[in-house]
Amino acid sequence: MVVISRKLGDSLMIDDNIEVTVVQIKDDKVRLGITTPSNIPVHRKEVWDSTGIKSTELDVGELVRELERTKEQLETYKAALFAYAKEEWESTTQEDVDQALKHPFDFKSVIQELETGNAA
View 1: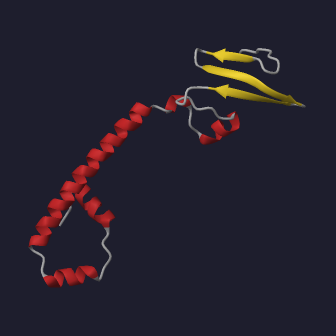
View 2 (view 1 turned 60 degrees about the horizontal axis):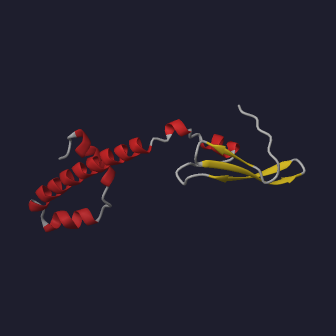
View 3 (view 1 turned 90 degrees about the vertical axis):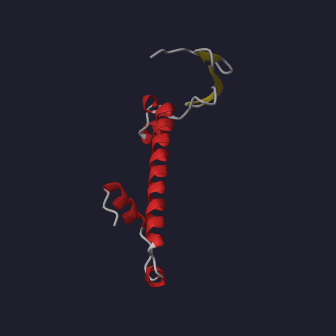
């Protein structure tokens, strides 16, 4: 930890892009103004600690890659669901449609069937 004394209106720099300025001193409280690039989060420590997220866990690139993988999986499920629906539709009678409309469609079970390969 670095300890630095500053007076009201004084600033200190962290790296080339973070400026901390003493903007008010009242009783036992010091108000700080912090200027940072928009991609650097600034939080009170108790708020930061309560989130359970540490800066080492914030890998935006990994989040983007995970979203891309999820998108690809959804596209695969969508294609499989459409293929299954087309195959089923071609053999569907009006009686089947009337019967199906009496029961809510359960997308979760269809996805589970597609994932396990047990689609009827």
